[in-house]
Image (cartoon, rainbow, N blue to C red; front, side, top):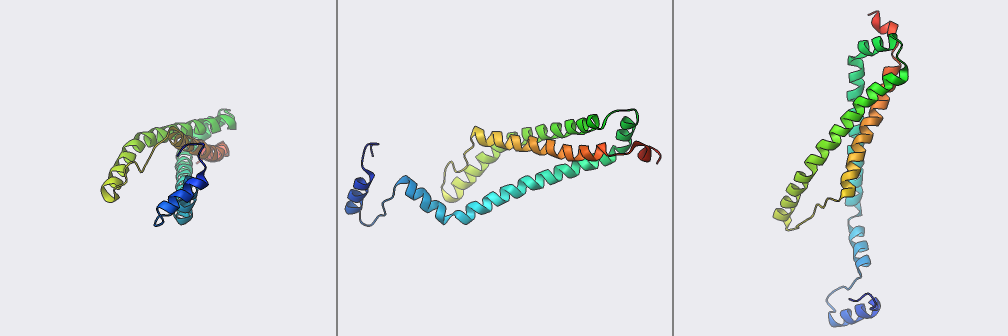
Length: 171
């Protein structure tokens, strides 16, 4: 159909010629598909949100355990006069490294996983190219990984900065 064509007239002509079919515009078809699949889409959004929150919680736990394990070292650093901000920076740098490492691993695994999912979808139900990766999706995933690492490190760094050097070093 040409861009200048009257969609209503074309739809009327097609409905008259093919009465057994429902004629819709692309927008109407997309709305109909989304209306049928809204629960599935909502479940997908919730699952992605839970996965991100779970990842952040696990990263906070990992870095908090790291702070507890290195409590004596961090207390010694604080005892020689290093400020709380530097201690937060040390833990924050570790979190940034974990975030970058997580983003790199995620990006390396995403392409083969999408190829495998496309193969499985094609083999099971005949849909080719179901999973499509865009640079924006990959960038968003990397940004979420790095943000999760840094935000988790800030929480753990705050705990590290609150260590009282004398109390820890006297043990």
